[in-house]
Image 1 (cartoon, rainbow, N blue to C red):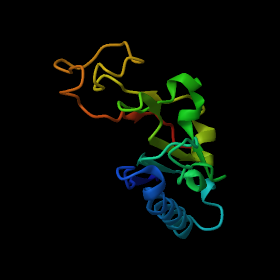
Image 2 (tube, one colour):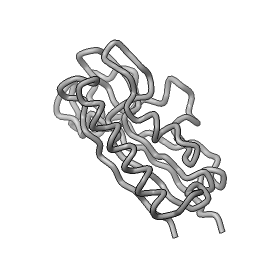
Image 3 (tube, rainbow, N blue to C red):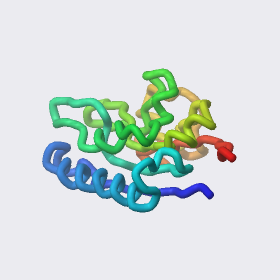
Image 4 (tube, helix red, strand yellow):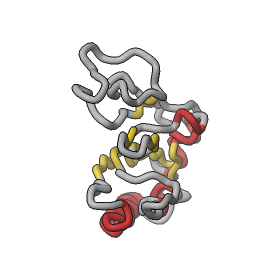
Length: 162
């Protein structure tokens, strides 16, 4: 059986550094929930922590990552890291022209080992102002609005280990 832990962490609205304590607490809580469910070696079980963690793993002039304890946890693999670095973005922040990963698929170690391929990041709903993506868009998507979202879904097809 595959277990999903679907997340939507606190946004950075109000400032990355100012909102980081809430995301840090959320990341710690997710790790505790997973450990409570699976015991001392949760990575041996098939699970995925997924969703909008609303932070990226690089420090910048706005603050430090608040999710590094979860994303860097030795029990999970951030499968987006399997893509070339320039292709890992799932969000475009227009005011700073900043392309970052805010959306994650963190596969348990065992599930990641059984599924070594990269995910796909679906960008058809991004506004045209996200110029790093020159590919096809959904009908009606505009320069700024309308848009499907300012985030991109991360998709992967999995084979569950026996």
